[in-house]
Image 1 (cartoon, one colour):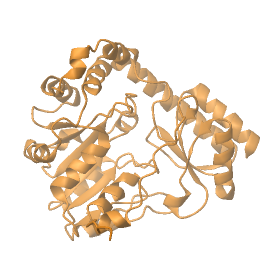
Image 2: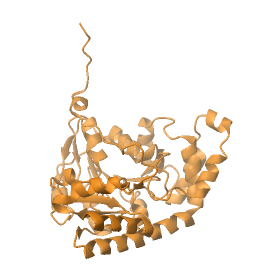
Image 3: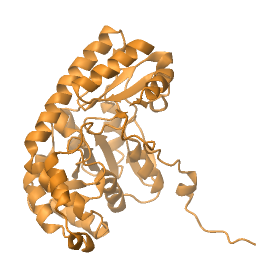
Image 4: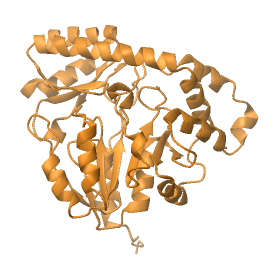
Length: 351
């Protein structure tokens, strides 16, 4: 008789996260909101200077942590570096969430929020964005009165592009006195709005940052949790001791020294987003305002077919029909103006 292993129920019920398909390097990657031109040359040069001895040593964090604390404008002890934003999320769940406890996640949003909630056996409360992609403020405030362990908000939100302003975030934090509020600022470089300066005023606030988007370091996996020092100390207790690799730290330091390159790319993306949105509207497709490096477009019943046709031209975009429960919504990452003109030309051929 084969032994029966005791598997957690939450794992048996879990639907695995679907990562990007293989073989994307030579294609126009507009499906996972990456930097489409690559990391700065300064980061590549810094990586080339790594020695065999550097690679043979376990990672040393202190120097880079202090440098990035200054970059983020926080004090010593208010930042924990993580293996990308996903590791930051898992660390927060490790600290706050027990099986059966409640987690509030306004949806549709980044799939990994629900993924980790289900891994940890949490009870998910999921207020839905409105038909015009308005944030479900009343439902979120009502949920907070029941004191869930976590509220997770992507700001800007992925895939809707919705951005909550400071007044709205203050309203949420005022009610959420017994709930840890995670604000995921993966796209902050494009929105320009951050709540990092609030962490000492709101000791229940946790901000997630990543170097995977504008900085173009998705392949190296570097993120961070920014919070009141007392919370960060709890995060350190559950964090893996060497979760971040040395190459990621070296590249991140080089990237922030080369901020001009990142600013140039951001400016290009913002201009490309405006131009691309106007072109889509001229073609009479419904678009939604976005504060990120992506835009949500409603292509109607032909949406899935258009996604496949673009893929045949090596243009990868993301069908988000499942997230909205209807056919049509497609999320398209924004690259350079030249890249987005290529996309518009392909859409005109197939739409």
